[in-house]
Length: 191
Picture (cartoon, rainbow, N blue to C red):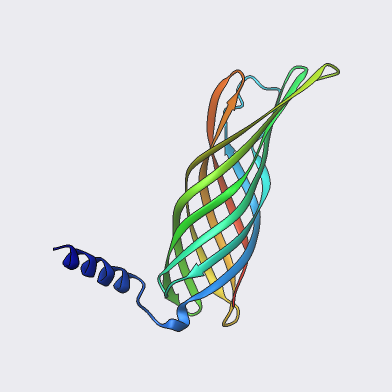
């Protein structure tokens, strides 16, 4: 019975990652874009929800449909002022996720990704001419995204994607979290 289960699992894995050997490749890439922090700004005198972001990508394609992707990202910072106190949350992290790709024809492709994100949030609060406080939080969470690619050459592609993740903050005053959505464009190169 154990042999049958093991053989079945190996056959299923082989079928999942079957495809041309040529499709297996490493790729690197980078994107830039804008992040939207879904935070409540009520009661503030000034609040910033949008910030530029970037992402460095390293991936491995198993076949024409499946890949695994790791990335280092920064979603920028959200800031707010309440009277003499100004504060902000900056977030960076590392993603690791599975990518499912579909060939749309005419050099176009689409992908969906889902995985785990190790987020690092830095909270800073400053009271004018008095004091500055900073707290850092590291939390793991889920992330997901959708995107498209356009092949410029056999190995280079234009890439556009939208990502969503939840950033958790544990400050000395309590715990808070918010969703951050990022829209990115960039390039990826396979070798």
